[in-house]
Structure formats: C-alpha cells, structure tokens
Image (cartoon, rainbow, N blue to C red; front, side, top):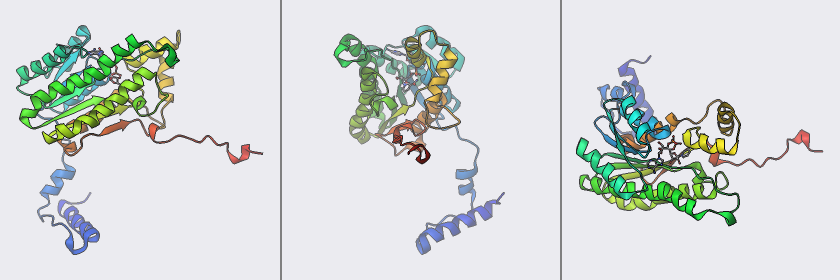
Amino acid sequence: MLCRRAGAAMARTGLRTLFGNNAPVIPRTCGAIDRRFCSRPERTLEGKIALITGAASGIGKATAAKFIANGAKVVIADVNHELGQEAAEELGPDARFTPCDVSKELDVSNAVDFTVSQHGRLDIMFNNAGIACTTPASIVDLDLDRFDRVMAINVRGVVAGIKHASRVMIPNRAGSILCTASVVGILGGMAQLTYSLSKSSVIGIVRSASPELGRHGIRINCISPFAIPTRLVMDEMNHHYTGVGNQRIVDIIHGAGALEGTSCEPIDIANAALYLASDGAKYVSGHNLVVDGGFTVFKSLGFPAPDQVN
Ligand SMILES: NC(=O)c1ccc[n+]([C@@H]2O[C@H](COP(=O)([O-])OP(=O)(O)OC[C@H]3O[C@@H](n4cnc5c(N)ncnc54)[C@H](O)[C@@H]3O)[C@@H](O)[C@H]2O)c1
C-alpha cells in the first residue's frame, strides 16, 4: 500500500503529465487527498429529510432503508396503510408512515405538510408510487377508464408530488426531487401502451420541470429501472402466466436482462436514488438515470453466424 506522502507525490506527478506547468496545485500536506479518496464510507444523507411515495414495498421500501442507513429521516407515504405501517416499524425510529393516495392532490399536499411538521423541512422528495396496467393487445380495444386511472397515479401523482415538494423547497432554495420512470418509457413495445406512455411522461415531466426548479436551486431527476420482480411486476406476470410458479416467473424476468451474471434488484435503484439525492450529484438535474444493465442502448441485428450461411 502507498504511504500518504508517496500517494500525494504521485498525484502531483500525474497532474503535471496531464497539464504540464499549468497543473493545479495540490497541497503538500496530503491529508486532504486521503480524506477524499481513502476515508471510510460516508453517510451521504446525514441529517436529510426525505419523503418517498409508494415506499411500503419494493423499490420505495429498499430506497427508504438505504436513505436511513445513510443518515436520513424518511416519511413513507403509501395507499396501503397496513404495509406502510409495517414498513415504518421494520425500518425503525427514523421512518414514519403517512397514508397517501397520490392520485388525490390533497393527500400528497398533506404528506408534504406532515413531513415538514415532523422534521421542520423537506430535502428529498421521491415520487415513486406507481401501478401496472393490463390493457388489451390492440389500441382499438383500449379501456380509457383504466387509462385515466393509470395516468392519475403514474403521471398526475408525480406532478402533484413535484408541485407540493416545490412549494416547500423553493423558500429554502434547495432540494432534490426524484421520480421513478422506466425502461418501458424509453423503448416502445416492452409493455402495454398505457403503462409505457405513463412512464414516457415521467421522463418528459422531469425535463420540463427542471429549468424552473433549477432557478430555485432545486434539482429534479428520474430513474428508469429494468424489470424487477416486485409485487407490481409479479401480479402482472401471474396474470399473464396463469398457473406458472413464482420462481419460474422470477427466472423469466431475470433471464430477460442484458448483463450476464447479475440481475436488476430494488437495491440497484436505491443506490441510484442515493446518488441522485446526495450532494455527490449536486450538478445533476433533468437527467434520466437508466439502470438497465445496458439493455436499452443496443439492439442486435440477429445476423446468422458465418458457418450457418451457405
Ligand atoms: N418493478 C419493476 O420492474 C419496475 C420497473 C420500472 C419502474 N417501476 C416503477 O417503480 C415504482 C415502484 O414499483 P415497485 O416495482 O417497487 O412495485 P411495488 O408494488 O413493490 O411498490 C409500489 C408501491 O406503490 C404503492 N401505491 C400504488 N398506488 C398508490 C397510490 N395511488 N398512492 C400511493 N401509493 C401507491 C403500492 O401500495 C406499493 O407499496 C412504480 O412507479 C413502478 O411503475 C418498477
């Protein structure tokens, strides 16, 4: 292992190679370098206050646990009271539950006010609640009532979250807003039209809201996860693959990924959320952080191998 002084000297030499005589000056006391590169993991959200919708299970719950482990206090807002209460108890004294149906603006407004009344402010708002949608194969048969319900939660609920979080963040001239989009909002044909459209909208909302919020010092970003066998997805898949065992369905979901040897899990999204919520992402806004193992960046031509062509 390098000693502290040798490490600093190497850093200075490396910078001279890159910048010549214009190399930035690094102080000879190398404590600063060591603290930045060699210290123990920081609790990156120490003292931060977060509100997460849809945090009674899945991605939201994993993110609540991750935020708390990193020093935040978290309010779990969910339409499922029993599961939400259980999640808060499981996550300990830094988690609280508030009932909230994100399709009702008053509920969202109350959840924000509850957070501020409990903790004095709101630093991080994660608009994560969402539902799946089973729609007929053809657009001709589209159920527009179901369409309205999905939009009310997946899109209107996100807009309500942004609106009311901004209401309390703007006076503080700081804050980080996150939203859960999806890979199905990037590529067509990966999910039903209604659900895909709702997630494309989330990506668009984030881009559209970022200029105004940026002028108030508030960052807004979204995360687009690949398929993860959470309750939402398992319910959907069970409906599609009637009578097929859960483990087989999990295998099908994991088998669809593009990155060999691993699969997408709630913790991967929680880690992405931790980064975007933290000061480490202080200059990242309007971004869609795609967590898909590279799935959406390529499409194979499917040409046959040379030895298969006559
Ligand atoms: N699991 C995936 O493959 C996947 C992929 C991309 C995006 N997403 C998105 O991730 C988000 C979280 O889903 P998940 O996969 O963790 O599923 P999940 O079912 O585990 O969690 C969804 C949570 O949202 C809550 N919820 C539903 N309707 C609500 C409402 N009206 N108001 C408040 N809360 C409500 C549910 O009670 C539940 O706790 C959703 O927005 C989903 O669309 C999931």
